[in-house]
View 1 (cartoon, rainbow, N blue to C red):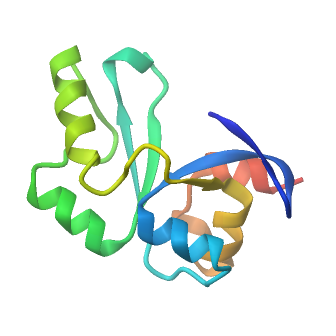
View 2: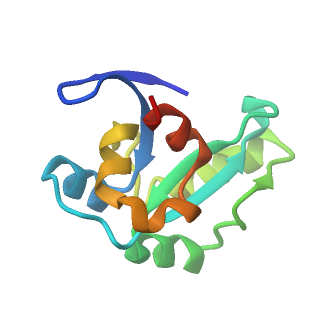
Amino acid sequence: MGRCICSRHGESGIAFVCQHLRIAVQANEAIFDIHRWRYHFDYAGDVPLHYHFCSMCMDELRSHGLPQSGAKSSSEQEDDRIEALIARVWDGTDVVCCDCLFDAVGVSDLASFDVCLLETSVK
């Protein structure tokens, strides 16, 4: 997982988010609409990448064949196809501080939130 230096939290992990979630986090807005999606890219080995999407972006991705969360790639060509699909809603630079995302989601969604975010948020 990548790291960032957050003006509020100091050193923190980064979270891959759609542009709508990035804008909400940067505006310090509460987020009530978040979907976590994990994928095991062939090039990443056993470590899944985690993405977070709003419902609108998740619906867009699902309508174009997004695999179930936790699926594993079997080839470089499949990695390329999934990356092209995700690029519909994520431009590769939409990242936020994990702790800021955790703050925006709040405790009510704690049970469904990423373990990696919890680990970086609990000090």
